[in-house]
Image 1 (cartoon, rainbow, N blue to C red):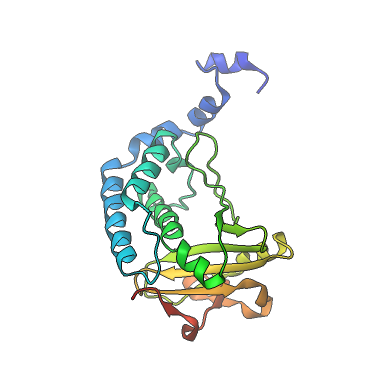
Image 2: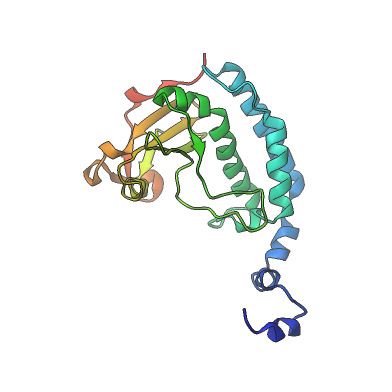
Length: 229
């Protein structure tokens, strides 16, 4: 913003802080129930510690408790939680769902690498470690540029079957010449599935009542595997 004089009328010299003021982000941050989030974080740590104990292949060096503590502290410090797309849901619920997915990426990484026989590196844009680095995009969570493989991780916790929304096919168009996968894992049922998205086309997707009629591909139950011993 070129007109700094205008900002000064409102008592601001920084355009980012002024933008937060206009969007009431400071008020949102003050209304978040931090105590509830801390309890939810503790529950996620308990869940994924147990999953790590019974997982068929896991990363023994992953400290889930410290990882969750670090993510939460930085998200709180940089107000990342109010940047998350809540679609009308409470921010506490949105953050918990996002955090569940971030933990799942780390916990199941070794299993995904074993399935594909590759080493993967993180690829997402939701970098919580800096003030202005957090952007939620559709970029896949993992990539191996040499082997030309991408993997997006989706973590669920219901008794519903695995469904893939049609917008996931965009990754096949964006990452040309790559093998594009979705790793679907359900911590309620103890199952996972690795789907090769390049093998799907528009005709494989049907209206799905679970997602308000959106076009989805239903993964056959016969292709699911247990992730626990």
